[in-house]
Image (tube, rainbow, N blue to C red; front, side):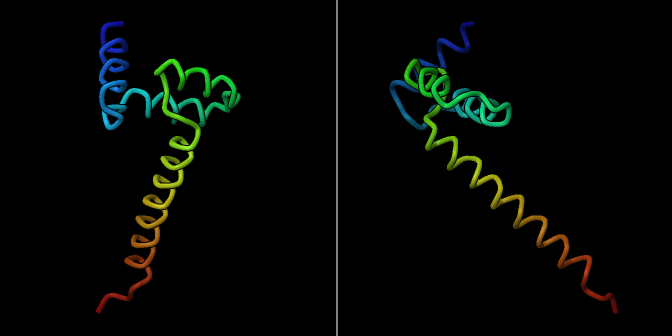
Length: 80
């Protein structure tokens, strides 16, 4: 409980201190929580906003896609 309260306080003071809220948003996106619920939790400081969740997922997908491409290129190259 204390970690949640401290995290909410830090996030309200500095928008870059949102690690817990980011994980909550990512979890809610992956479990198909309705957008209205996410909006309420973001307003209460328990999650990041819907647009931030979307940006986080998009960024994670780009990073994973890039790593997969580089691994595939490594596998496809013939060894001499």
